[in-house]
Image 1 (tube, helix red, strand yellow):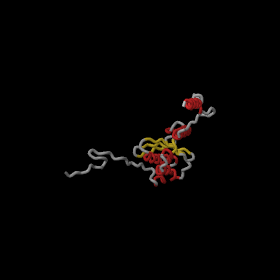
Image 2 (spheres, one colour; image 1 turned 90 degrees about the vertical axis):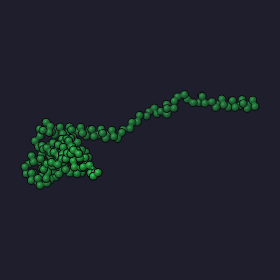
Image 3 (cartoon, helix red, strand yellow; image 1 turned 180 degrees about the horizontal axis):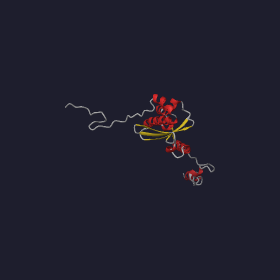
Image 4 (tube, helix red, strand yellow; image 1 turned 180 degrees about the vertical axis):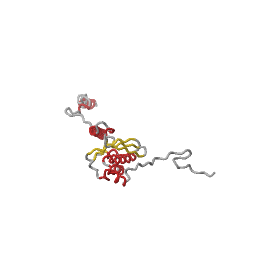
Length: 200
């Protein structure tokens, strides 16, 4: 029995792990000495940075094309619709449309109806690729702004030539749409909507 205990003691001493395991942490043993840290770019931040650069480029373009600002230009028209106001400047060019220092397709969210409102006056006269359009729009929503821009472009085209009046008038592009939201009335829920009638 004594020999078996001594044999077990010697076998355990030979299997001791204290001399075999390194005291260094596991992270250092797995580190790569020549590797570089890896950084991941967020796609949202990349898109925002690209949009900011494009806006800065368009702002520089507009300022270079319109020295003295909008008010100093010759071919200018003002359009209104609902509570939206648009100041439009036309210059000979390739057909670019820039609204508030942004491309028209981006600003109007690619909506085909709103883009059609903006392009209709130029298409009526066949000037789609003859003039660049620079717009400052404020107030209202995108729909109202698009229709205000349409009226502003039509009025600016009159300053190019008085002969443009007849075709623009036929298409109804020189008429200011005076419809606005009707005010709410006292005792009613909206302009005309009444509370439900109760007989008793």
